[in-house]
Length: 401
Picture: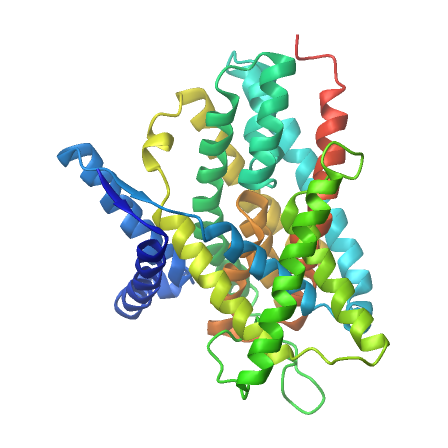
């Protein structure tokens, strides 16, 4: 057994990011299909750890104590970056995209239950291998697994939920780039240009851009992020067991939105968008590297064939939905293609994966202001509310006996 403490795990995650960068620099195939750096490096390390465990009986364990704070910090920066005046400009697109996302939630649950029935499995298993863990991710999956175990008698529900969410996290980071690249090349799409000839890019669109920030702006932004984490965690604890119970990261994002806009309206402080985006990109990259390198791939290897079949078909369905529904409904243009990549990211994995997918696409083909305006808010905030409603409606169906 090789155990790395929190600092060693952080060091390993940073090295994984550098490894992913070197892999992409040398492997044209991965650049062609816009695979994000954390995915390339993280999956390679996860595969090496899996091989060590399988053939040498050496198990590597990471201390992921910093993983949740990094994820929360990323969502805090999304909230702090959300200027309500800017969100108004994407209001219609946000509402339409939310409808598209809700349609996927329903499709995933119908498909999961139907496949479980066709394979002779419990219907509740199909629901667990659907929007609960795919669009919901690890946190939502673990929360609902407890309900499925206690109220519906599904054995090993938590282990199944974690394995399904892990599968989704991997595939969400792998299919987003190819889907968007196919759409962009197939329809010869280019970014929309502003009247002055330059695209209106944001910090999250250009993670490698050099930013003129100061130590003071960084310290002030770190303080704002800390407030978001503390207040969001307190609100999450307060809401537990109530009708408005939401994951902690959603509350963190909400606090960020309120904090930024209240400070601006009252004229008390102007949030530094450059410092916010810089710290957000750092948190995102390290979080993804840490999450992917510590994947327990042996949990996926132990999935029963019926569940693996359900998840494989869900992945194909996600890609098809992104190409034939998300892309078409959102306008069949370059922004719609980038939105499709983002939808693959959080439709199977998580919002950080969606952002990484879109960054990989825009780094190659050009910025998409609309996608980076809409996806973070829908993927990090509205989807959890919509998913909770859809799951509760499906649980009312008398088909789980």
